Length: 224
Image (cartoon, rainbow, N blue to C red):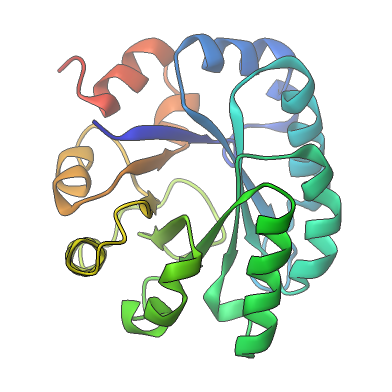
């Protein structure tokens, strides 16, 4: 059964209140997915909104923060989010061109007692991240173009998940989780899970639903 990381990207600012986060926690989501966008790496800018969400959540729930940095200046945002002690911080392979910088980022995150993830966009092949796998806790496969919520899952990304899962098993990296982000709903969840995904990021499917509990249970396969 896959874990669920609920994205807040589709939540309107006026609705991002403690009651919402409490209701999502009671629906038994496993993580709160914090989509940090700087308006440079992707067009949308969510810096202030996501920081406020993260601060609120860290004070009122025990659910871990799953911080997804879609930013160019990763170091700047590590300074902001490391003090919140999220469960995991994920940055994009495409945002860093130098291997030394990538390894320094991984080291900094891990030295602060936080798990580290690396994300890749739909067009990026998994081969480029293989050398970093021994140092990672998670790989985030973007199943949509990063930058906005409510998109449809790109079917071709399922083969990437399958390929990565096979490589992880063959090379005994069983402690690395695969996370999929984008277009996850009751229609796509089975194919994504069967491809080998361990953590499902779902946003509007949950947050726009009338019943958070049922939506989460459907994604976890607990009800049909």
